[in-house]
Length: 193
Image (cartoon, rainbow, N blue to C red; front, side, top):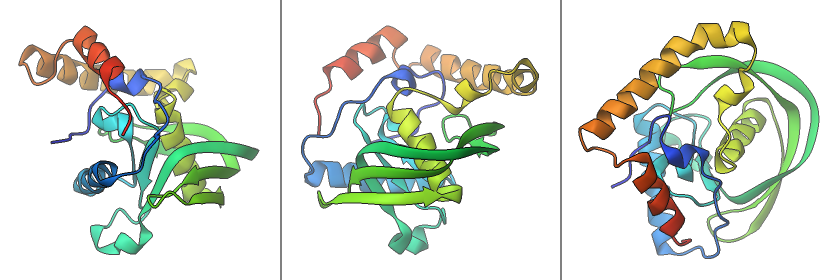
């Protein structure tokens, strides 16, 4: 059973490996990820946010399970163009209750594969472009808090980050999650789907 891992779970900083096979196992993981995402009122979820170090993520900008026609899966995504930039607020399911202003490209072009293995190329802006950039960053082990480097911004979010980290460490102490070293060993040992 998958679950969304909170910061600072080591999977969130683990650079994901490419998916080499799209099979029923991967499709089942994708379905479970959508279920988790909807239960948390999210619009996107990267594989490493559920402890799987593979390059794919799911999106549904409506955050509504009843709008399955809006579901998108991006396998082995690559952002190939970025245009201008803008700052806007973001949150993350691995940082519940934390939001911050993040500067990202205003418009992007992304290449990926869909769940049927078909190549896709999308020009995206607005929320779709921002969500694709956010989730692609996850696959590279980069988090939205990495963009909050300005001391003023960090001052407003550091208490919440510490609270989330303390919750994860408490869960480790209770045996819900193994030690960081054990998680890293597990991630290194996982083969691609």
